[in-house]
Length: 203
Image 1 (spheres, rainbow, N blue to C red):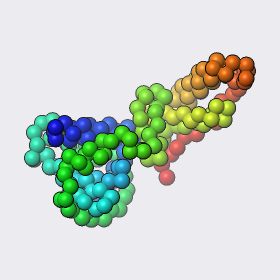
Image 2 (spheres, rainbow, N blue to C red; image 1 turned 30 degrees about the vertical axis):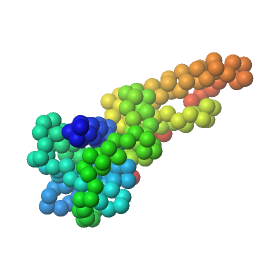
Image 3 (cartoon, helix red, strand yellow; image 1 turned 180 degrees about the vertical axis):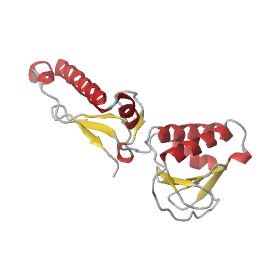
Image 4 (cartoon, helix red, strand yellow; image 1 turned 90 degrees about the horizontal axis):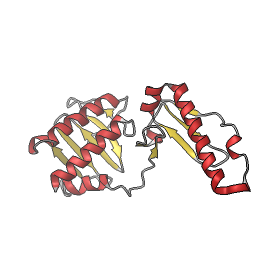
């Protein structure tokens, strides 16, 4: 049971890191650690261990030397993903307390009901957090009040022009669907032009 929870969490964190929904920052200390904040918990990652510090200040540690495969490989892959997404960030020291269980801390981070503002990419359908991502594109359709997103990875793969074309096509399809549902209450909805699509860039 414990190994299952750890495996699920590490797999999830790797996916979020690779798609830019979770951004890691180099801690700048001798341990070559990376840090991030996820669901009110501060994560500190080295090549051998992951420290999870909850909002109340308690810290638990996932140490790869105490576990078997696939935990060891998953932790190494998370370290690589964190390394690739690292930016410029100053961080402080972690206060370590061991009053809660590792499994409890991991389970809290896995909880899907924890109110994180994730949005679906129109192309790959992957969930990501636009507030922690850059180089993605977004558009709020004034006619339907819906908001649409294409993630950073898909913009990179398709190119900006092709991603914007896909966005416009999806918006028109969505309008057609809404028009069919509303009947004659708003005729010609799909014929209205799509206004400017915005791209979010890193500050």
